[in-house]
Each structure stands twice: as C-alpha cells, then as structure tokens.
Image 1: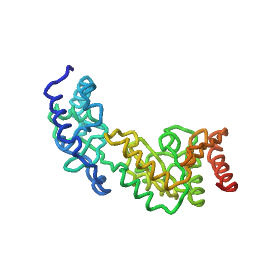
Image 2: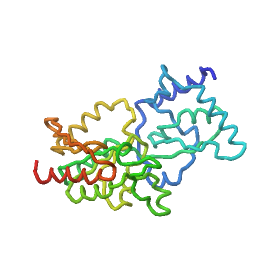
Image 3: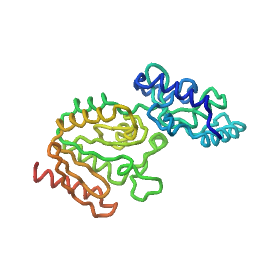
Image 4: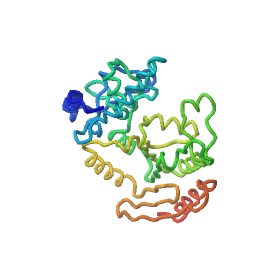
Length: 294
C-alpha cells in the first residue's frame, strides 16, 4: 500500500495537539481490569514513537496486512484483533498508544469504532522518588526481569508454576532459585529493584512476587520507552539514587557486580556454575559481602 497524505497529515495534527501537552496518569486496578475495549478515537499516537516520525512514519504495507487480517477475522468473530494494544491513560483525555500503532491505524482506516486494549500504569518519575523516600535501607540489589528473572517457555531451570487460577493471571515463570534469593535479600535488609522494558504495571509485578512469598521494593517498568525529557529525568534520578545507596549490587546471568555509587568503582564476581547452582552462588557472593563488610 502506498503512503496516504491525508493519514500522514492526521498523524501530524495528532502529534502537534498532544506533544508537550499530555501527562501520564494512573488508571488504577479497577479500570485496568474492567476496560478491555476502547474507542479508536480515544487512542492517541505516541509522539516519541517512530510511527509518528516524518522520516520513518507509518509502514503502510504493515497497515495493509493488518487490514486484510482484520477483514478476514471479522467474518468469523467480533474479536478481529487478537492481541490488544498496550496503552496508558493520559491527561487531558484518552489513552496514549505504547505498542500497536499499526493495528490502531488499520482499525481506523477500516472504520471500526473500537479496538481491544490493555491499560498499564508504567513507572513514572514520581514513583521512583516515592520508592526512595519510603525505603529504610541503604543497600540495593538490581536485576533485569526480562534477561535474568523471567524464563521463556520450555526452559528447564524454572520455578514450579503457581497453582490454578493464579497461573492464568500471572503467566510469567521465574528462574529457579529466585524466590529463595529474594527471601535472603529481604532478610538481609537489601532493597530489591527490578527493571523491565516490558509494558507491565508496577503493582502487577509487586503482586506477582508476593504470590511467591517475597517482597520487591521497586519495579521500574517500560524502561525502553523514549521520552523527550528522558535525559534530564534520568540524571536527576541517578543523583537521588547515588545519595540514597552508597553501593548497588547488580546481578545478571554470569556475574555479580558491586558498584560503588560515588567513585563508580566496580568489582565483578563471576557465576561459573550451571543454572541449578545459580542462586546458591549468588547468595555465597552476597554472604562474602556481609562477612567482609563495606
């Protein structure tokens, strides 16, 4: 499908109307649970997404493919779009699209009035500040949810799934030993911060770990999201974190990194054992920190 000047102009007008004006707001658990469809007209393209960039812009081939798929599906079911758009509630009105711009465009061009959505409350600057203010600890551990904590389907090194019906609500599977490791860190007075580029609500992540009997101090979600003021916000938050935590311990698949905040000095401790011994090795390294002191 060739480009569409009228649609390009519509996107440009939407960006002009909302860029520098919209503010993300919390949707709340009830709204997120109840709202599964939203009017296409109440959804707004993300000004920071490539979809809205004049140099990149909408991919009309992808839009055309979705349109054909939606037409075919609608002959058989009302659920023409199986994968919901990921959106967040914004002020002054409606929802900002985080993932699914081309599906939204296809629904618009077909004249569909509504499209399935999943509303998320991503971590905002004020949420991170609240985590820092509410913590009584000066020790922090960080982990990447996507690369370290969550495991893909079929992975052998996973924790046992949650019982029914919880496993249908919390579908992510944890690396074997994560609950034991987090329990140890909780007991030793560490704040646990988990990061993800995924579009999860932070309170969803908190509840997920509570089902495994452990506490996570902070869940920072949507870390891959681009925003126009990201650089300035990041610097401010890094300064607050440095002031709060003299050091941060970062845990990944192959190493434990001990990072001293003020000097930026890094000590690396390898994790050479296989997946069965991963959490035990991490705890051994953390025990050494505890015994040897700061």
